[in-house]
Length: 260
Image 1 (tube, rainbow, N blue to C red):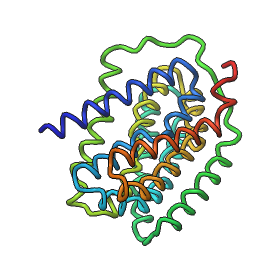
Image 2 (cartoon, rainbow, N blue to C red):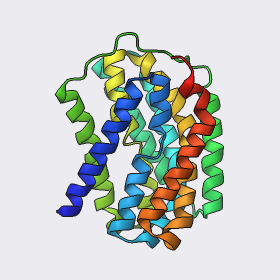
Image 3 (cartoon, helix red, strand yellow):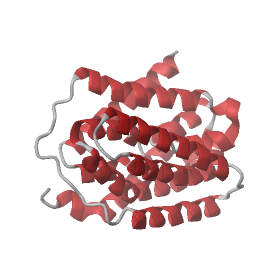
């Protein structure tokens, strides 16, 4: 029970912090930060704590393949998000989740190494960045004040996904644990709220910039595989976050510091 509470507290704290930063800025920055290793980091961290560092490290190559599933998720959400109605949100969600599951099944037929998994992730990020290149970056002129119910929805959904994925890790094995550790548990609730409150075009901006943030997840996952065994879960996580944050700032410093 204590571990479940710890998972919930850490998940809620990180998501609230990211949401506050992202939504005070713009959908563009929200999309980039949604690709930052929050979900993946949480899941791999709890794999290391709950099952052991070796299990987390073994899951990393499949986590890298899971990036392809995450990119298919956001692309299919983009195709399904045509307007700001609830029906459009449901259709986009069904497309996205179904696409993630189908792609994960295909990726599960492979036997990746750290190198091949990283190469597939690298190629997928470039491909989907190209597919999203013509989507315009939009801004939010009049931010909506989120109600407690809307915030609770986001937190409940993200926390539930973390609890389910980490809780099933041992029973489903390294392959599926790794593939589903890449599920976009931060970007999905954010997408739904922005889609319903600000419309499909703002949601498209988040989606357009998600691959740009995913570079940091690629780096984070690789660093985890190199540090968990040598330095342990806590120090390994700290090192991976330090490197990933450096990469995030190096790639996106102009976006973060330009006038929105």
